[in-house]
Image 1 (cartoon, helix red, strand yellow):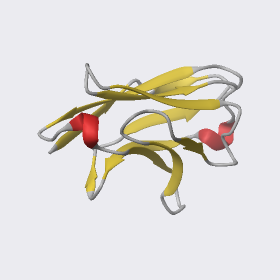
Image 2: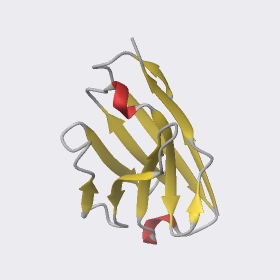
Image 3: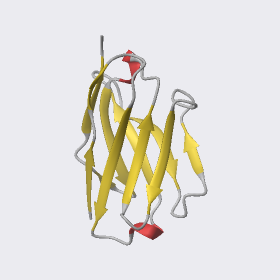
Length: 111
């Protein structure tokens, strides 16, 4: 089982980024997927989840209305579109399924 995140970077407040997570080694179309993040000095926190069909989607209150999780079962990818980014969104973002985590991708929001 492997998860590889990409798409992180440096962006100004109010900007947008789209993170992607490429999955391999398991039946992606049967797996629920999630995004988490960990800011410096803070505990890792849940950001968003999507079920295997893509029909059940949940977002943390802190990102609701700004972030959108989606998936492509043909490409075996899960994405996180992040709009209206705030400095408080600065963190390492992780993709997760069951007990497997990706290596993370850094998102820095700064002017």
